[in-house]
Structures are given as structure tokens and as C-alpha cells.
Length: 306
Image (cartoon, rainbow, N blue to C red; front, top):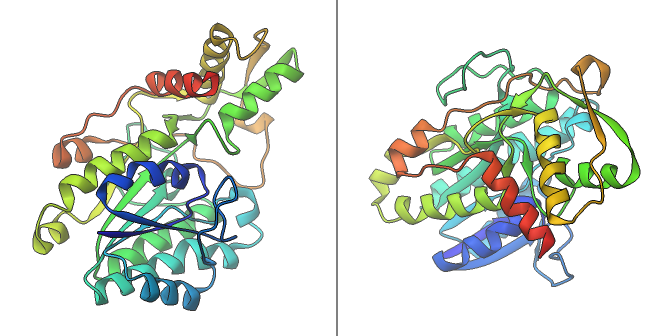
């Protein structure tokens, strides 16, 4: 099988290069045409629909994995049209190409498609109600992919972090070295999810899904929630990061961590207050139980130590 991996230099894309390798030949693509470390790869601009279609035709994959997106949540408020090209239009382009060439698509979406006013974990069939530009564009991408006619898996995830790239964990470790005290939002809840868990789970699901015939794959097409088990606030996550990082020798001391309200940390885009996603459908369909977020944190801290 030939697999076209878009966004191979992102947090999830980087991990997917490794996890997808046993399934076939992985053809990586990035906007710059380079992978982390400088190796050359396919070059494609997610904002350019014609270039995207041309790349698919030239590579001729049986599976397209789209780990690329316009992920600048705050900037999307001021450039929603640009974000819509990458997050909304591009999945439709990929889906239509796949439908015409009997290929399949894996796509990644977000908790931001919900309004965050829920009181229990969101299920896949709950109504979407994005409260910002980023969520609206990602919701549009889900709809475009679903309408394309392709066999597809749309994985919604949340609070993604890794040992590399820009993310909450790496920011907290930097601040721990720079400050004695910091405030962290305590009234938003979600499940911190490592990029490596997303990638490995994707590969496990694909190994099961791709074994089925085209009709069965189409039947199981749709959205699935892919996040760590459990939940916490950003403040809880920061405290856990510092405790594990201190024990691992990554920081010399734990700063004082004060819980603050979202209102005390204003951002250009509103964030969902409640981002916990229900993963029962993933478990019932593919037999996968995802580990608690604390286990994922331990593994990423171990990776940083190594």
C-alpha cells in the first residue's frame, strides 16, 4: 500500500511516519518540502487546492492521511478565509480525489467543533456548535469530507502535546526554569493526549479497518473520538508536569502554580470550557482502550529524559 502523509513535520505527522511504516510505503509531504532534520520530501501547500489534487494524482496513494491544518487558533479569528482553505476546503479535495480513485482518507479534527458547554463527555453524534473561527473551519472540513463519498476516518482529538514542537508541556517546562510563580487556567477541562498515542492508535485502527472490503470500510466510515482516558484542568496538567519533570531531573524546582480563571488569561479566540470527548465508539468498533492521560505524560517525560 502507498500512503500519502500530509503534514509530516507536525507533532502528529512526525509520529505517524513511524507508526504507519509497517502498513506500507509512506510518502511524506510538508509545506516546505523538508522533514525535521532537513531530509527532502514531497512539497505541497494545503491552501492550494489544485496543487493538492495534482500531488494526489502524481503519488497515486491507496490511503491519504491528512495531519496538516491551519492550527493557529487565535490567528484564525483574523484570517478565517485563509484557515477555511486549509481546514475546510482541503479535506473535501482529498475526499473527492479518494472517492474517484477508490482510496481512503484519514483526517484529524478537534474538540473545538463543540461549544464546550457540556456536562458529560461529548459523543460523536452530539451536535457541533463551534464558538470560534478555528472550530468553524474544522467543522466545515468534517462536513466536506463526509460529503465527498470517500471511505474515511475522522479522528477528533484534543489537548495534543509531544516531546517536540510547540505545546503546553514544553511551555510549562520552559517557564519552570524562568519563573518562581505562574498562573494556569483551572476552569477549562479536557484530556491531554500525546501525539505518539494518536499516531499509534491510528495505525492500530487502520490495521483493522483496511482488512475489510470496501463496503465494510464505508460502513465504518465516520468520526471517532481519540483522546486519552480521564480528564483534568490545565492547572492539574501543569502540576502533574512539574511533579514528573522534577522526579526525572528535567527541572531543578517546582514553581508555585496558582489556579486562575479563563477571564484572567484573555486570548483572541474563545476556548471551549469543557473539551472531554467520549471514546466508547472507538472501543466498541475497533476494540481499543486508550490509557489514562497520566500514563501518556509519564511516557513523554521519559522520552524527553532519553
